[in-house]
Image (cartoon, rainbow, N blue to C red; front, side, top):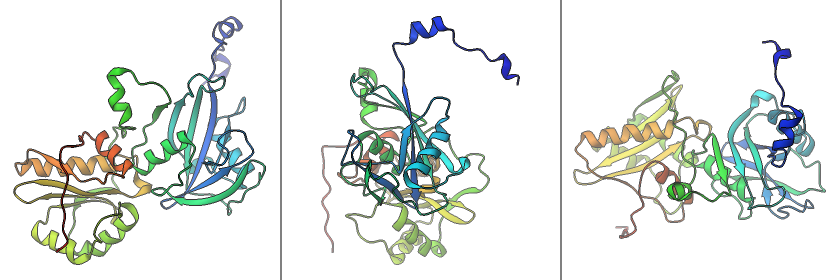
Length: 328
């Protein structure tokens, strides 16, 4: 393509539209398994004492968002990142209710490959650098960055999101439910295979759930228990595999009376690719074929990520009953 044919905005156009501008920023989250590297902000005058991205900063004039994220990572934590190692997470159009510099567009990237151990190089703007589990973030994480990290942990980060804007009445309920997973699926991904599980998968299932699923406030999974489930209902456990390795699961249980969904989990490296949505589609298809007319998923009250995810997937919270349990 002939770059000389590119057109530029005129001075008149710039004068007409110059009273409004979005300030661009780039963010890099270094990820190691299900952990994220965060900086403790200090001395900046903005969110000091709060944890923020592994590296972040404004996009300079003439610089791409990718190059800005790479530059900030080198300047702030001393790591060199190849451009192809930055994976787009989401782009957030953000406002802070009318402040003079609060109209922002933030480009968020994930990175799982860099060259050296990260270290703080700008102690005047950061007091600490530490790894945190994505499902156990510190209480004080910069609000719009927590918004993104929670969506990533839930596998529900949309390509584009808005943060801080008042939602129109017609979409307020959807906005409150959190980001909606992208509509893409794994169709056409020849390396990703869906199917059932058998007793040879027991150890792999247990190991996978320990790293990819919610494990608080619930009985410990054992190979014997999962083996009994598969023995009684061989089609209940649906898995996604890549190269033979389990990267996603869901249990679609049906006792002949009620249908329940359990253990919807996706490998963090496979999230935002439609794996969870495809697992759920297959689970619902199985249950409907069995004559089920209502399906439920049990989610802990304090599991904010899970509640947002199930809401985004079309499930409605039922507030008029509680579950009573007893361990025999």
